[in-house]
Image (cartoon, rainbow over all chains, first blue to last red; front, side, top):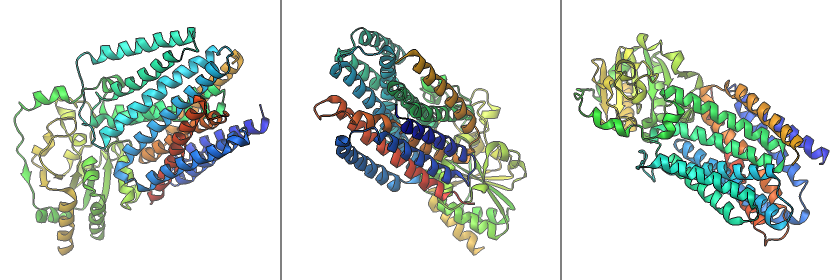
Length: 461
Length: 94
């Protein structure tokens, strides 16, 4: 064990920790990310120091290919697509862990004939299990997020017993591998079961629950890196993996809390499907429409405006026209803020990134708990592409599937304008009571186009 | 692997997880997306394992090929993850 190499690994672990610590402040975050990437570079250099010169050519070819693909995606991706990209990269991380585990397994069981250590073998099996689930689970999440497979939950009879059978088979195959480590067939079975389990665990989860799933898969990719650390007896892998694992778990908890759901409830899936039928029987809501000109006058007459953005804003790419709206309002000394619900968008903090992209200062983006008292003193709330997060049924109707979910108290404002394409339901498949409230006006049409019209009307006032 | 080295690895795992929980709980919700893509890049630390796996000599072994696949995937994860996080954080202005 070379002392220089070990010290470099320690140094890189410290840089990861400081890098994450610097993410606690928005102004330091970019430097923190840079520091963390320097930590990664040091870990890579320390590893290259242990490598035979003869392997360097193919290593550099692989690194160049990977870097080019990574950079291409990173600069090409639209900010609306960040959740897909995170899911995809998560999956790659998971698959990389599986590949490292298989590589080590093959080396120890087939090439060197020595008996394979039980601790290493258990680590290899865990790495295959977590990495495999991370890979296919993330791919399903990726396909669901970019709409290539349906966002609604896919469930079938006997789904949970099937998962259980797979899990038991995995344990049996693990025992078989332990008894006969050089038999490659059991390892193949372990890999296949993990890959299938990844698919089975993510398909029953609905589109609205994707923030939870991405956070959880993020955590898994960290845990997979940890198991690789146990295989290779390497501390930096364990430190970095543990940091990521912890990060994913915390984000998962925050998301679950913001939806008033337990993690088990999310993972069992099928939410929104069972309740949609009951809801249609209720009395239909009568809404009031508002035109572009009238909406413009309402903005002009207000002294305070709060915008509630949702995923619909991202779909319509309306964040840039909203900034124009903000500029017009601020010219007229109208206070203009954004209320961000923790589960708005398709991943934690998604709205903040989209609004930051539109050059909206981050101190205008206010968290739910901070802004909820302000709605009652607000003249105008403008809801763009958000639905369930402002549905008062969460507070008033114990029958509603979203009952108990913390919401933004938009209904308390003097006037509410909702920009919406049509009267479709939110992702939970629930009718929104708010739209029938006397102080609520509907501005139908594509968010980007209608808001652009409102802005030009305001300019003429 | 000896039990002693296993215990040390478990110590590292437990302490690093605790530290992770403490640090990440303080990250403001505004930064949750960059946090996730940044930590995603950190999980690409598997690149260390991939590099070591590539160290096997001779192309005929499965170990080497697996190592090279892992290396490409982990590099995409690391480079793409850090680059997109930087791109996002650059946009956060006051």
